[in-house]
Length: 364
Image 1 (cartoon, rainbow, N blue to C red):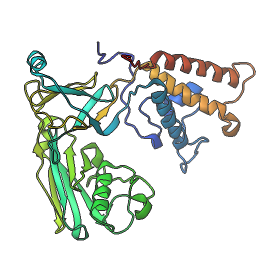
Image 2 (image 1 turned 90 degrees about the vertical axis):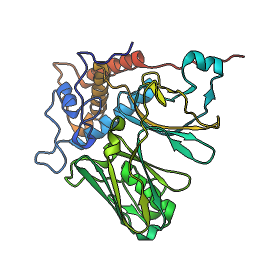
Image 3 (image 1 turned 60 degrees about the vertical axis):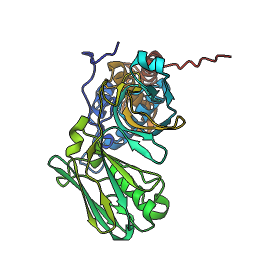
Image 4 (image 1 turned 30 degrees about the vertical axis):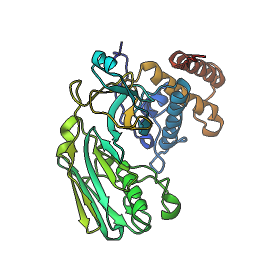
């Protein structure tokens, strides 16, 4: 049984760790638990110690600890270029099952399948989402690329030095392609930073400085150095997205809808189990022949996970109270050590309760 919503679930948070808003808890809830005033940002009048940004960083770490400990996640994560072997079902199984074969993603609770690419012997062929292909012919003559979704527009400019909101075109076709993909995905440029001089994640907003491009598009560099750009809009909505180029060094195809998603179409999935089924269209080769990119994470945050995250952050603050002088040690009430022990006991109990255990069956 899949739980869609429980009345005790907390409301959806817009994640912004610098503003003290995490996926599981917020700085306001931590302050309320500790019985202290709300945390204030560094540089603002009356800035607190710790600052709002420091508490946000503790929230980020607490959420990662919870995910690692429980082998589960209640926030959105990206699984990128996950390779799978395709096991073709024989004609008798196919007749009975009504699909030619399937793959099981490494993570359950799929939120959105971004890409399914089949190896056809020469290249990976997309069979999901609305896709545009960008081809670089002369990286030195690229000026800019413009992506649009509805009334929104993002202008991506080429540069010859390090920029957080541009893509570097100084070192060759593949470097330029990687830089562009990092910019669209708003990722840290891990493979190019050492020679472009980048020091932080790429990021770009639309012309109204409101919407991030990575919420609407995803990019991947292929082996032949072309760039596949996928719309993240649901279903066939992405086919209305637009792309244009400036400069003589690149060309782009229009967004083409490949979202034949239906049990009677090309593919369908069972999101909570992580199963992706292929009805009749399937790759030619069996080994590493399916490439998946998708987001995953349980779509609801249980109240007990919110409690665990809030108390984990509170424990970190209590453990550092000698430095912060945040919570006074009232001899007439519960002292700091007792509060820490009580919160930590609750956290341990919750995380043990929610921990997923994997069992591996050996046929020998």
